[in-house]
Length: 188
Image (tube, rainbow, N blue to C red; front, side, top):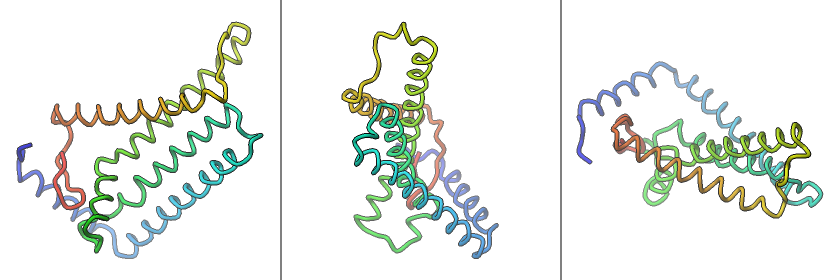
């Protein structure tokens, strides 16, 4: 892809540097600590929910399996977005294969968008299921069974991954995505 305009890229870099200069070192450190705490709490609490539903057989109901899928998508969101979005990897001492893996995982925030789409689909299916179960209990000829939930979750993750990739492709073809710097390289 051709460089659209080198001035736009440098302008963005200057804007980012000016934005980063707004906060003092102490304020940046406070922000990083708070976001780290929120991320750790999210991973820990969703990890406990996931562990309990997986470990205790009595908790494996269809509704709890929907909650499990939401917890897993929240863990993916925490791992894909929060730890890496607050600093530029090119400005750290992380180099080589590790830096390439982290940049590939966070570039475009695919993990976060897929997790958000999974959450949206899971909540939609759960809401429709609950609505039909409450408002039309005698008309329903089907209902979710625990043995079929792995297919529902697999389809939700596949559909979400496809939609995230398709949207990224569509936006890049239409040149709607801005040119920005992530991990020391131009994206967009």
